[in-house]
Length: 382
Image (tube, rainbow, N blue to C red; front, side, top):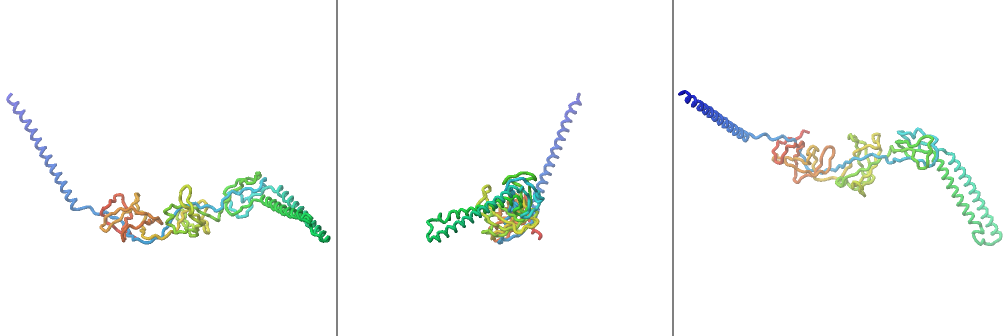
C-alpha cells in the first residue's frame, strides 16, 4: 500500500520533462529559421539580379516617301455574254465556241440558218431596183416638163407643173430602199456569230440544233489581253498619295510576293463607294504578261508623297497591344503608343516623337516589360 503514491508521482514528472524538451527544441528551430530569413534578405539586397538583355536598333528621323498598298481583283476589261442578233435554228457550232477555248477577235463561233435572211436581202435588192426605176422616171418627167415650158417660152406656175414633188418622193424612196437593203444584209451577216474581241470562252450557253431568238445568250467571253483593277483606300491612305494621281504608275505583286508588272492609274477619287464610303482608284494593266490572270487577287503598291520626321522600324517592334518600347539614355524602358503612317516590306513607318534622337527601339518586346524597368540594351546584328 505504501508503494502506490511513489509510482503515481514519478509519471507526471517525466511528462513535464518531455514537454519542456519539446518546447526548447521548437524555440531553437524558430530562431534558426528567423536567422536564415534575415540572412537571405541581406544577401538579396547586397547582390541585385542582372538587368535583362534587350535587342535594340538605333533610328533617326528622316524624310520617307510613303508607300500605300491595297489588294484588288484583276478583272478583264471586256467580259460579256455574246447574244444572238437574229432568230433562227443553230446549224453549226464551231470548235472555238466550246468552253475553255481561247479565241481571237473575228473567230466564227455559231452559224444560224440563213434562208429567211437571204430572202429578205433579195427582196430588198428588188425594192431598191424598183425605187431606182421610179427615180429615173421621175427625173425624166421633170426634164420633159422643163422642156415644154422652155419651148413655150413661159414660166411654170408652180413645182407641181415641173413634177418636182414626184422627184423628191422618188429620191427618198431610193434612200429608204438602200437603208432597208443594208439592214437586210446586216441581219444576214449576223447569222454568223463571231467573237467581238479576243479572250477565253468561259461558258457555252447554246447547242447545235437549238432555235434561238434575238437577244438570247450563246457564250460568255472574257478578255485575255486587257485587264483593269478597282482599288478602295481608306481616307488616311488616300491622304498619303501624291495628288493628282491620274496617269501615275503602280506596281502589281502576286500573293506570294513576285512582281506581276505595272499598272497605270486611269482615274481616282471624285466620289465615294456607296457601301464602304471609301475613295476608289481605277487602274489598267500595262503590257500584261503570262502571269496576269483574270480573277487573281493581287497586291497593288502606290508611291505616295514624301513625309518628313518619320522613323522606320521593324514590324516586330510593335506589340499586340499596339505599343513600341524605347530605351532612354539611362537604359530605362519607355512605352510609346506610335502614330503608324504606313507599312512596307516588313517595316513600320511611324511619326517621330519629340526630340532630336536618335531613338533606341526594342525590336523584340516581351510581355514582361514594365515602364521604367532597367535593361541592358544590345544592338541588333546587321
